[in-house]
Length: 419
Image (tube, rainbow, N blue to C red):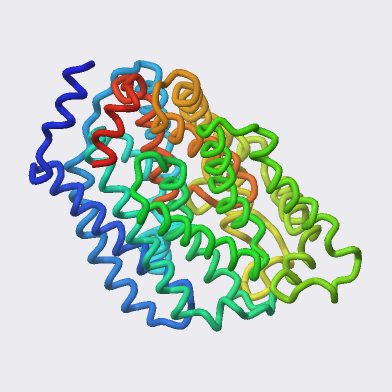
């Protein structure tokens, strides 16, 4: 084990693997940044798609060359092969070769083809020096997120909840570009002050606009890593656990009782969130989903283009059938059934247990926390998409299943990641 760890110190950033990772991450960044801005509906889609094609031409060949089917864990190997095979069956069932569908498959990071290949990043080389590249990617996407916020500030400050352009534009900005900054906060002992402060700025801006836009799922996704980081920080400083939670308990009480039944007394910035605090936007859609799913659909799903009958929800749509549902664990079932969700959890849960309870360093525990947060987020949001957030979920599974990384001392981990 010691020799394996020493090898990670000797790897040259100019080696072939490092170059391929550079191509992969550059292509991925180009693709996701172009997709995010295309959701604003105020740009030229054709230009965005041309840029996305350039990203695809970079990350796809690099990914193919980086994949190596090496496992030191028979359980993980067996479940992962089964899961990948099942993903291929989902793609094969219902895939359409018409022009409109091909465009969705190639250019839509949420509903497209590439999200089904995200788990293959688990097969990339597992090396701490390579993981440092991810921090750069997170920072670049965070910078793009802030730039987009400035460019579309008038759209984001539009408090008309019926304006779907404003609503969904920001949702994609956060999911695709900013939420991964939370991982930098969770690994704060290894990050420089500038890196930590920048990641904190990105998360705080995300929280601010999530409040303004009343995006409850995004609030959960952005606040959760911040709260856990705060608790871990105070715990590392030997502070009382109740004291650590006190500020958040106070904020919770204010949010619950501060309105006092008078919406006019609520500050304008919080008014939309206050109005939507108890609004139920899930039950009707979920009931329609349950009614449309047959026993076979529940078991194996309906394939990559699976739909369910849900009239009266998407008023701008020409059909009453929907290809997605906002509750992501149901979305996974819609496409691949309980088999898909079950295999995913059978891989993820043992991984987070290993990282959280059978590790000697904060990196492994932070990876386990990221896996846990992603699983929790399956209910309020769509998180199984082609984004860094989802890529990090599988990278964290790799970290938690690496005996070398889990059992390494904090000093040696910090020596590499803090350099």
